[in-house]
Length: 83
Image (tube, rainbow, N blue to C red; front, top):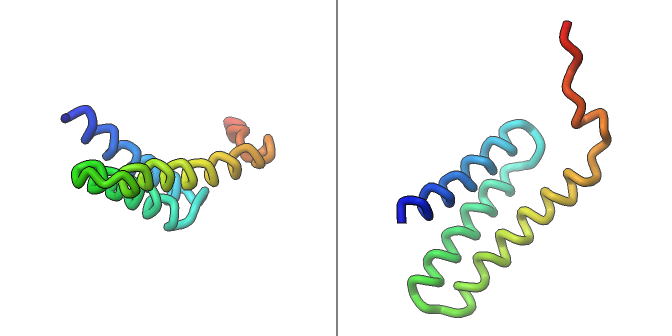
């Protein structure tokens, strides 16, 4: 159980850091949090639609960010030269 809580917290913190860095809007951490909560509440209530809805939300949110990362130019990935 602690590992599962840690991984969910890690996903939310990565989403917040990515949005805070200016790479995504507020919708990214909100979508990750919503996906995790829908998944947890759906699974604990034994509701198939909610239990599968959470991972679908996570897939869509991370998929949108992944596509935007693939479309980035090489200059955006390059580290700045040391002065």
